[in-house]
Image 1 (spheres, helix red, strand yellow):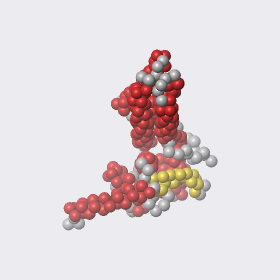
Image 2 (tube, chains in turn orange, red):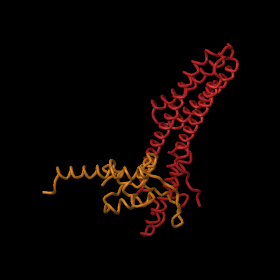
Image 3 (cartoon, helix red, strand yellow):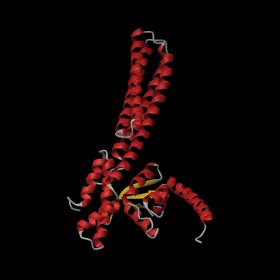
Image 4 (tube, chains in turn purple, orange):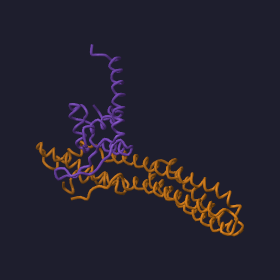
Length: 107
Length: 220
C-alpha cells in the first residue's frame, strides 16, 4: 500500500500504534509494517511530521529516554489521544463495514 | 556513522531546509537516531556500512519533502500562537481604551491629558502595525511566517506596555484631579496583569516556533 493511499488514515494508524505503550518513531514504523503483514511500507520519514502534529494537537506526548545506549524520543497517548483513538476506531469500523457491504466479497 | 556518509549528507540537507532553533535540533536528533538504527539493521542483515547508510536514507524518503512538511507545521504553530496573543492584546487594549476615554476627561491638567493621549495613540499605531504584519504574513504565504508572526505579536505586546505606561500617567494625573484614584490604580494593575499574560502567550508561541516542543539531547 503506497503512502498516498494511507494519507487519510495515518493519524488513526499512529494513535493505534502507540496504544500499547510509549514507542519511538522507528518502533512505530516497525509496528505498522509488522502488524499490517508488510502491507504498510510507507517512506519512514512521513511519520515524523505527523507525530509532531499529533503532539501539537495534544493527542500525543513525548520525552527523551535512553534505551540500549541510544537516546530516543518516546511517544505516548494522552487522555485526549486515547479518546480520539476510540472515536476514530468507531468511525473506521462503520466506514469499513459500509464499504464491505457495497463492494461485497470476491465473485 | 561516517561524517561524509549518506546519513550525514541527508541530515545536512534537512538542516538547510528547516528554520534554525531547538526545534530543528530535536528533529535532526530524532531523524539521525532513526537513520542510525535503520542502518544498523541493514548492517546486521549483511550490507556493508556505506550501502547500509544509503539504504536507510532511501527508506526514509527525500529530505526536501520532509523539510517542507515540517516547515508548514511550524508556520501553522507560529500563526496560531501569534494570532492568539494578538487577539488577547487587542481585547486588553479595547477595554483600556474605553476606560481611559471615560477617565481622560477627568484629568484637569492639559499636559497630563495630552501625554496620555500621545501614549494611547502610540499603542494603537504599534498594535495596528502588528496586525498589518500578521495579515501581510498570512497573505503572502508561509515563507518566513513564523518569525514574522512572532515578531508582530511581540510588537503588539510592546504596544500594550506603552499603554500600561499611559495608564500610570493617568494615575499620576488623577492625583491632581477629582477622578477616583482607586479606580485608576485598579486599571493599572489590571493592565499590567494583561500585559504579563500576553507576554507569556507570545513567549510560548516563540518557543514553539523557534525552540520546538522539547529540547533535543546533547550528543553523547
